[in-house]
Image 1 (cartoon, rainbow, N blue to C red):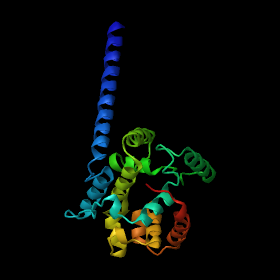
Image 2 (tube, rainbow, N blue to C red):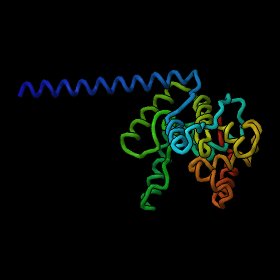
Image 3 (tube, rainbow, N blue to C red):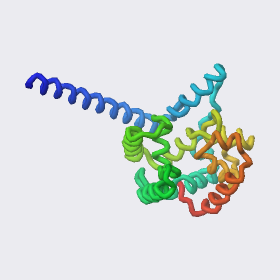
Image 4 (cartoon, rainbow, N blue to C red):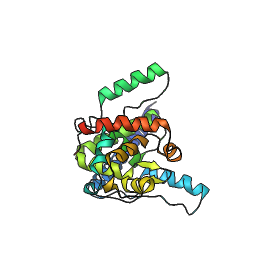
Length: 231
């Protein structure tokens, strides 16, 4: 009995040590990316692997832009579309989560997520698109780390540069050139609203650019943009 308890204690301590090491690894990368721009994210690596299964020489379309070189219209559009309380919360929009749960319960399936921009950034940087309680727990921990160490401007800057906007298209500059053949600094309010409307299903909208649903979503986002607060 004593030997079993001894081994159980060692196993628990080993697991705790591994957990602590993993958390320190996450915090190390979060702290590093506060000052240095990420070159590749977990989502980018997953998408690149998928593209290279079909074409070995495939490359992602991406180009980092400083915050000041991105159209304010796109910043407002993303906040209006994805996270209206971005400047107010500390990583989690509890009202948004509650509304999403009620909507999902009413529909009988997952149709809304309630994730903030910081949560989406955490997922993009480190995790995968799969849904599980473990992944949501990791996302929550990373979200807290990002909110504790970055300011809102840095969060939005990195988010604008790493999110997927089409098949192998990542970041504002690549998206602006892919869809409009212009730099991200020159995006109009209407173009920005349309790009923001694509974010939940970027590869679908890349293939279906004239779907009526996209136009309706763009109009709603455009109407919300004047009241969207950005860093």
